[in-house]
Image 1 (spheres, rainbow, N blue to C red):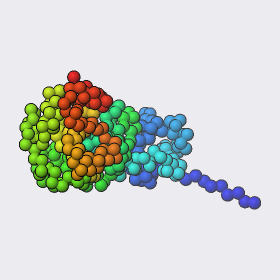
Image 2 (cartoon, helix red, strand yellow):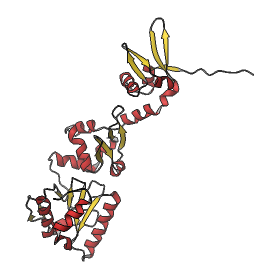
Image 3 (cartoon, one colour):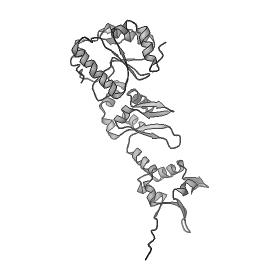
Length: 299
């Protein structure tokens, strides 16, 4: 019975870089960052970890020594992860694309509720996952960061947000998918608050003034960062908290609108504070308690 030996094919690091479609310099850096190779006397040499991965040193009397790897190493998860990452868009790319500072990009995505700050980096949220975000960590520092799919450049809510940040005027249909056709036309924002907002009811004016006097940054009628075309009454960037005042609960259409909005808040897991007429009469007692549940200190 004849025994056939299968000889392992080895690739130089340069040849491996071509196989996995990565620049040679980037591959050497990646291998060094992960402790597979190290630099000694201006030469790349294998570490024990590199040897354990199957790396060998080859020598030729004419061209000297070089590191080689078994061909199957190209399937290593380290390279697949890097390949996946290169197909996605990072924060630097998005900042350049939308012509803003890279230091402003992640806070904008955080305001949308797509990411959260953690350990000097950024963590993907459930909402961020729903639009295709992928979580990564820097090889050396372990600092988390997020990359995004190509189609994020066509995301309606993201495009609207960048237009708002850059001060570009845009016309919007004042119509929501939760039965608010004509709602804003019927209840025009005519009441001016202490901080200059124009709101639609005395209750909203009292809420806005209370937030302003408590030095809590807030937005009025901020569009929710979701596919549905829905607006909140108030949004607090600190704590990512939404406030809804329900004022016409005896009206059947209004009650139906309320139920559908609450379903949307629950669907995306947003932080929601609900206020009614009784609460409005006791804002000094009610709001600090409700805000504290989300880590916001009112006084």
